[in-house]
Amino acid sequence: MARQARGQMFSYDFLFSSVGLVLLLTLYIYSATAVTGKMDEAELRAEMEEAVQVSAGSLLQTPGDPSNWEMAPINETGVRALGLVNSRDALDPDKAAAFFSITDGDAQYNATLPILGLSRRAYAYNASLEYLNGTVIYSIARLPPGGINQSIPAERFATYNGTIVRFKMVVWRE
Image (cartoon, rainbow, N blue to C red; front, side, top):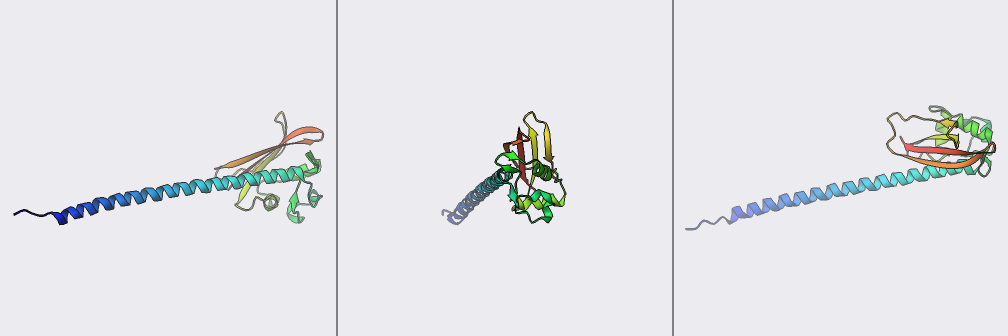
């Protein structure tokens, strides 16, 4: 009499195929999660690049709205746009002094975020104005509490009191 082990063999086949299926599903889920994470990171970087370019461009290409925004504290004036120039790329010394008088933790710093378009994802920024030799004229230096994970810089050139200067802005997500 021969023993038939068909039932037991079927159980082993089912077990091996189930383990293989679980491994394939795990690999698929891991891959999908990794791809989604990379796409989210790329989207965030693109948004940050747009935010810093628009902010820096607005500051150095417009006089602001209202054009005399520097006359009163930013958080009290109903300012709709900040601008540091009177004519394209020629910085107004009074507007530059008013903008760079903002300090970290100041209510005016927080008021500038939505005006510059940086409030969408809790962005923060640093900005500086310096001569081409590196001497700093003005700066807003905000130190993030936990360090900077990812930052995007922008650099523009303008004239300040007849001298070519460099405007730098760095945006990051807090």
